Image (tube, rainbow, N blue to C red; front, side, top):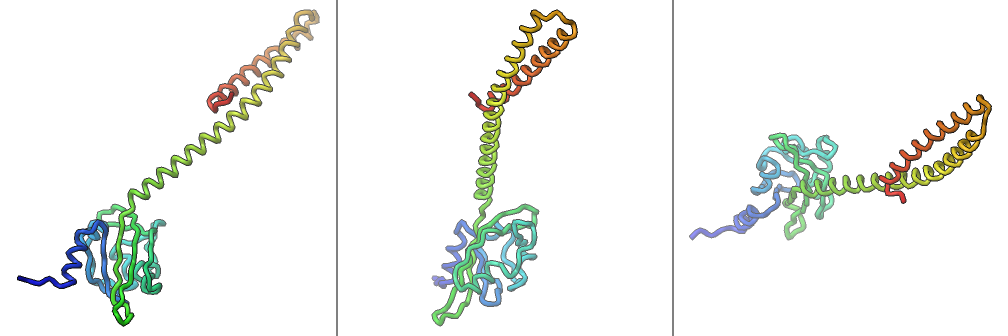
Length: 218
């Protein structure tokens, strides 16, 4: 009966993890192991060639700005420098099939009993749904803010229209009363002009009040 080594057992467990696992030697960054989920997230398996300073192009690692991710800010490099777990969530993987996958990376340095770092383990999480939910929430908040602004504008417009309508109505009543008794033709034309102008003003305030009602003005 074959006896499995510790490395075989760990690798077997890692294959079933729901996150991408990538392991490299420290400090050079030579590839050691990548599990199945890593291949699904990246669109490729681990690559034996690249070392520290040469990961961006072969693995398709980019920032959210669409530019190649700076090699000096890679999870492996930062974990080596910090000598502790680092978390990076602004990486976007450009797969060979041209699809894009935003990921969050947890990089953990591994040291021997003598305190010397021997490996770095990086766990990659696909955060596509998290990003989509955040974008949907932002869009929902933007629409709510727009609706609130429209409601405020509608309330203001309703108040102005109401006051203006009272003024127009008063002028129209006075003009109508004067027109009823005025006999001079020129003055009658002026009063008729006032009457027609106030009528147009009333139509305008009606439009403003209609907008205000859509803005929930009361």
